[in-house]
Length: 89
Image 1 (cartoon, rainbow, N blue to C red):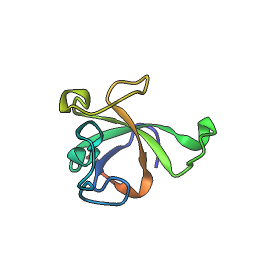
Image 2 (image 1 turned 90 degrees about the horizontal axis):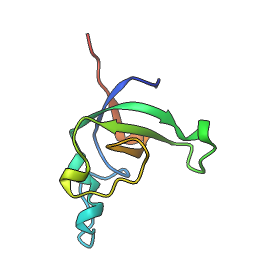
Image 3 (image 1 turned 60 degrees about the vertical axis):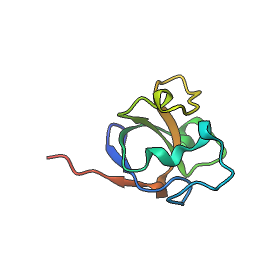
C-alpha cells in the first residue's frame, strides 16, 4: 500500500452489512463498492489502530448522510483488510 494508490471498499469493519441497530449517519456500509485514494497511514500519525489508512472517497460522503469529521473532505479511517487495490493502467 502506498499513498496515492486507488482502492475499492469491499467490506466495512470486516462485514458486508450493517447491524440492524446501526444509526443512519453511521451506516458506512453504504460505501461498499465505492473507490477512493489512500491519503495517510495511521501508524505515521501514531494513532492507536495501526491497521487503518485514511481513504478519500470518490463520492460525497456527507451527501449520503454519513458523518465525516476528518480535515480532508470525504475521507475516513478504514481497516486495510476492508480494501482491495485497483489496478489502473
